[in-house]
Every structure is written in structure tokens, then in C-alpha cells.
Amino acid sequence: MKIAQNITQLIGNTPLVRLSKLGANLPGEVVAKLEYLNPCGSVKDRIGVSMINEAERN
Image (spheres, rainbow, N blue to C red):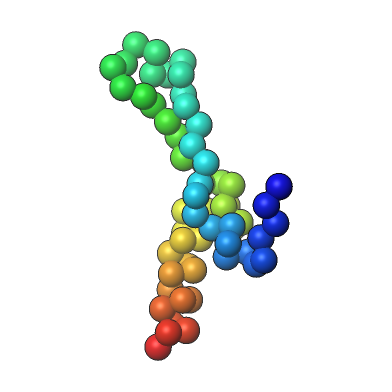
């Protein structure tokens, strides 16, 4: 098990899950991105960290 040094290391690399029943008769794959597994439960986590990093650089 990986242990993060801080919460920002947990943002990104959001897991995907294959929706095999939904895409059973389709030529491609149907997958869902599990954004709720981000630390704050939202896709906005990445944007927030990006804004903070940019502000700290300036």
C-alpha cells in the first residue's frame, strides 16, 4: 500500500471502471472515471491544486 506524504499526492490518477453490461453490444469499450475517489470528491480537485501551485510560483 502506498502512503502519501500529503493530500495533493492523492489527486490525479483517478481510477476507471469498465461498464461491461452497458457496452456489451458496442464496438468499443465504455468506462467511467471515478472522480468521487479524489480527496475532495470532485473533478475540481485538480483545478484547485493547479491554481494553488500557480499562485505559489508567482
